[in-house]
Length: 96
Image (cartoon, rainbow, N blue to C red):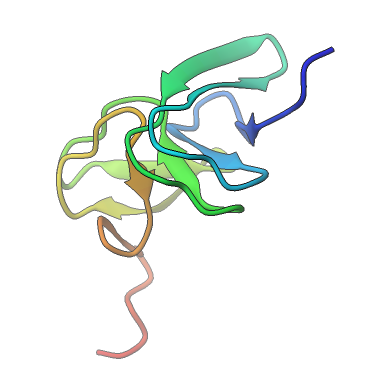
């Protein structure tokens, strides 16, 4: 059995979470039950952070846990790091 590198929480998610830091250029296979996604990461991804497993257009929802966790503030390519620099929470930032 191969080592788990990333987890897709729910089948409709468009991001997955890495379980340890991953270097740019690494090919990662993540799964959720029978669903598997293999993606080459485009950026260094810190442990516990997300990367896109599908293209996400600017203004489109970012989905994790099967729920919308925010909206993309720019186009996000598969393999791109997804974090505060390219997603804004639907709940607001808390500082505005």
